[in-house]
Amino acid sequence: MNEQRLSEQIEQLLVARNLRHMEVARAALQPGYVLRAARHLHDSSGTVIIGTGFPVAGTFETDGPVGAMALYQALAALGAQPLIACGAPLSHALAPQYRVLELTARDLAAARTEAATQLQALQPQAIIAIERPGLAADGCYYNMHGEDITARCTFFDPFISQADCPTIAIGDGGNEIGMGNIASALASLEINASVTRCDELLVADVSNWGAYGLIAFLALWARQDLLASISPVALLNYLSSRGSVDGVTRHNTLTEDGLQAQEGMRVIEQLRVVTHFSHS
Image 1 (cartoon, one colour):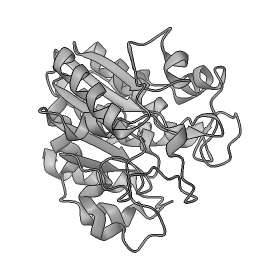
Image 2: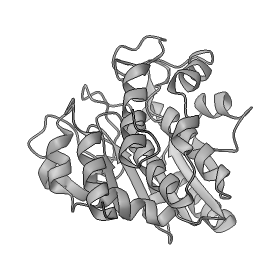
Image 3: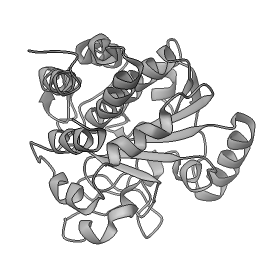
């Protein structure tokens, strides 16, 4: 199977459950987007910024950080210098085990300054947003229930919009950074869609799974079974012990968007099969 066909197979796999109408989003994207995004990360040896963290119930949800942690581990294993950008309390939860760039800006003007300063200092080779709130047309952030959560958010959008390196975004609902790429397709959905654009947008039923799609290609090229070492249960345990909640149920459970960790494991195994690292 050539890489373009493999990418299209992975893209279909990631939205097979169609939990939040991301099949609509996939149809609006030019096929091969997982491959194109992964190419931006191939052979990275410098800084790669991974922005994540969606505020829920006074803390952070599990979708986003799990994928960010998995991608961080894969990139580090391949020689890159990943850095997870997020606000408190997620930044405090990750700091003991990961290199963290704590986001502090609480308004767009301050965020533009913060992004400009950090981009100049870090000179990233790529920037990725995984399940990161994206600004709507009115300049506010909204959750899936249409609630204005701006006061609870730090701003990551300027890191994407001001970057002079490739930018990648992963989302599963329409209100995340990157969804501005397919604004017309999202108009039919009942959501305050994000208008923030990126170079390559990936969609998945659960944003964490989009990160696994990127890792699948990095593993293929490196001839290393990088997905085999990812344990959603272990990553969820790490986050749960530090106060995470499921973004759908808002409970501190070992789940992502209302789904058991085994669903994420099933996606990982499917990706290992299509990239020939597993024959199960």
